[in-house]
Image (cartoon, rainbow, N blue to C red; front, side, top):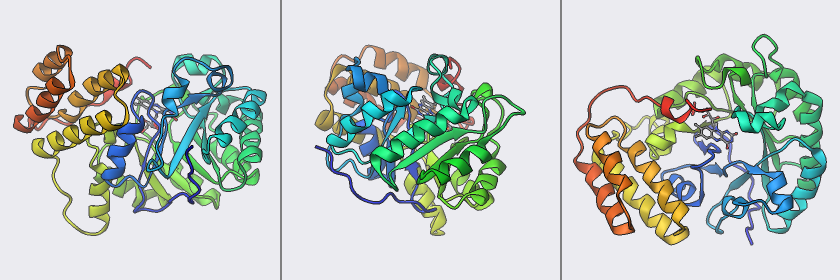
Length: 338
Ligand SMILES: Cc1cc2nc3c(=O)[nH]c(=O)nc-3n(C[C@H](O)[C@H](O)[C@H](O)COP(=O)(O)O)c2cc1C
């Protein structure tokens, strides 16, 4: 039973780990918490999967009491299914929930879920209201995009209406759904939303480094930032942001520190989730940690042949000996298939 009754942390010094399908599982959330993530969000969970016992749903809800504060992110497009899913989650002790109105993956949008909800605001509001009624005040947030189609941005109207119906916080990824991950995130829209509502607004979008996080906080006046792709290449990004805000020199992203983080990640997987899926996920994580260092291609090749935890551990340790190649980090491989 997961008992998480704390109030969620909002503030410049309280960076969150974003929901990341395929990545923000229990071991990675735990790793990010050790490096200063104040709150974490699960991978998106299908409400249909919850209600009908879909394959893989249980894994997404794997947690331990120390995995707190935790927000469960839900996606779907039918209020009745949310109405049935919420008591199942509450019975299990989950307390805080986020509605996914931001994901632009084709498969999710085709079913009317994720950022497709921005094109049907009445439905989005109905679903959010269903969640708030089930979970109670202070327990539900919504993660939005600017709107569905460029030129038809409706995040301000939707944001105000969500506040009125009892949403406790909003997260904005300031691109339209149609934009996917193209162009730049329009941070100024985060500032507009933060000024338009009284509930906390979290920023998401192009926060690749701790410096980006600090700049976004000061430029937008948002309540806090949520690291996504930035945390996948640097799980220590949370601590670095806190260092910058405290006027301390943030530690550098070195091969040694990334190897250390990778080894901790492996240890956490062994403690928390030893499934073959978790093992495969680690093989996807390790090259991300080594991004920006020479020899990453050889590392990726070698990882394919890793068959057991010992081989994986040796490979993670080898990251310490890679040299920096000083090429700007490129995250496009994560989003090119969306
Ligand atoms: C691999 C991947 C998986 C993601 N999964 C989710 C998800 O499950 N739910 C969600 O709301 N957003 C998801 N996102 C969007 C991120 O939470 C975040 O809003 C987006 O990446 C913008 O932040 P960034 O530019 O700092 O990465 C995902 C993004 C990536 C790259």
